[in-house]
Length: 429
Ligand code: DON
Image 1 (cartoon, rainbow, N blue to C red):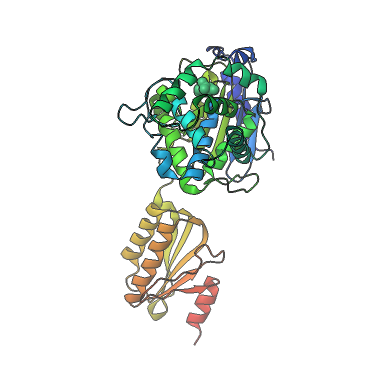
Image 2 (cartoon, rainbow, N blue to C red):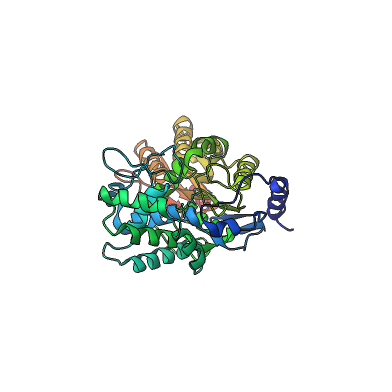
């Protein structure tokens, strides 16, 4: 059987293809020569599966889509404190190239607008790096997110540098507030080289999937950034990634995203998927017109909005029943799926409401594929309390989804291979 997902992506591309509204970016002459009809979309899962249709291997410059990734490098290289001291995390509500800084601190409001991105670029890598070394570090980092070696489009970079008056003005303002420590022109040159890195929609989807996958590249398995950095970047993308269209985007699409003036657009759903689209015509906010339409369809068709209610927590309790009776009675809770706080709360409530009389209680996690730390701790505490209440507590965990299951002071949790072992052992004379 062929997966239906590539056919679905092709269908959605056909649905948006007729929309030729929007304009190519003209303030960068090189971008004005792009083929306006290019159109592609790619979905990349956090375990590395890639589905795409259209122009998914056509190269274009990454532009502002580089910003979240360079922000991630800065956070990783310098730590949260020094970066947050120079770049805020508040949505500006202004255009991406607005020449505005916080009145009191002189900080750019966030790392997604040019002022913040120029600052973030200056914070990538060690403090004493020369400009060329910093660019090399950034390109290497972008390549790690993509899972392949990326390169700079020299003509696009030269074209933008020739007209970089606004970015230079921003950089000199940043220097005047000591947000930048280096020569503003050198920082802008480095930032524009970062923006001129060539990518495809396939690369961008994998970069987004790396963010969605706690910072681990699904293709190469490389841990590019740590989980707290990925979370910080996704959060800032969610609130600031679409500039002064961030509010509409959050309500209509609801996926942490970042756009670029060459027509790229990425979205990353934590723990699920990275998405990238490519269509060069832009709206008044500098976002790809057909890219936004594609994301609106993906979000509504596949229920990807981050505010979509996850599967009901009760779904984690597959069954709650008693085997045998009297002194041999065993209360069995079969659990399933991914368990986080809401699911663990449901399990604990089921135990509290039902495991009153049976001398033995079994937690069967054979069908659980993931359990986060808080849920693991809650289940172990439930085992401890059941022990203290006089129950024998058993855990069926063939995949060791709960390694070293120690319930702590006064608790006892016996791990058994399967239910048969338990019933045989219990019922044997
Ligand atoms: O600095 C600039 O203006 C461009 N290199 C990047 C701007 C951009 O991609 C805005 N995003 N939509």
